[in-house]
Length: 352
Image 1 (cartoon, rainbow, N blue to C red):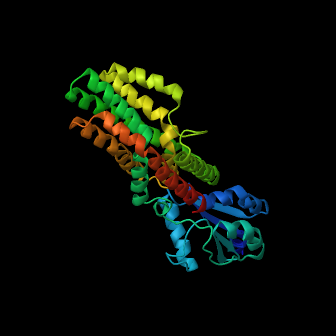
Image 2: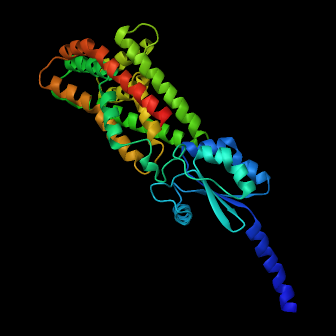
Image 3: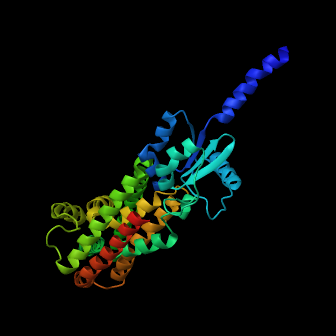
């Protein structure tokens, strides 16, 4: 009899635990659809109704990812169907689920009350693997190629080459120009890491970050397209005229420290001119930490390739003035191409 009295409380606790409604919520840091669920505060609302909510971040936590896959297997979700955000409702020993931000936001409270979920919907779901989302190697390459054909970057290098040729030998010009290009590469790479980390850190407002980035990129694209028809009129993406005397003053010195400083300054000053595509690519990169750094290295390598080509052409005997004439003739088409790509990237960020 005493044993029964001792066991009964434990049995009661087990029964109460099995009667407790629990929501197992699976999400990923950087998942825009998961951010929609967080912004809706529906999880907090069901917790107020004495429902236990357990959260599992699966992008960067392998144990949670394994738990997610175990739940998905038991729920009968194939590898092609599963995604996040996923809300699993555990009630009276039964399990049901809501998959996708709209399903969870619109139906979770009712599903908890009725102890049942609904089925699978395609809209509002992010892949389980973040590297499947938003970014591909080809988008990196194409974006970098378009960004590299940039009249702003060409103009400064050509001016530097003219200055260097007038004050030194071809070998000195080659050495100094390579240092300048290296400084541009390093500065852009470090700036990219900073922007990338900043975007990734804003996981609670990811949707707003994507929206703002998409809008900014589209506006930049429209300004570039405007310059094809009305170059230099109104608001335009180019190095501010107030910075040009600083660039000319540093370039005219021709010393190696001055050239390195010039690469750093130009990289900062020309961001309004070149930063649109970079921002778009970094926004898409921010979804996944696993390959972003290596892709950023590749992007910036492609970005400086035209500068290296121009340097080698001048080193082989073509005058910088000839290349400058070509730049002035073709800059409108460069602007148009960049503008079309920017608008396309901006729409991609907003819609996908």
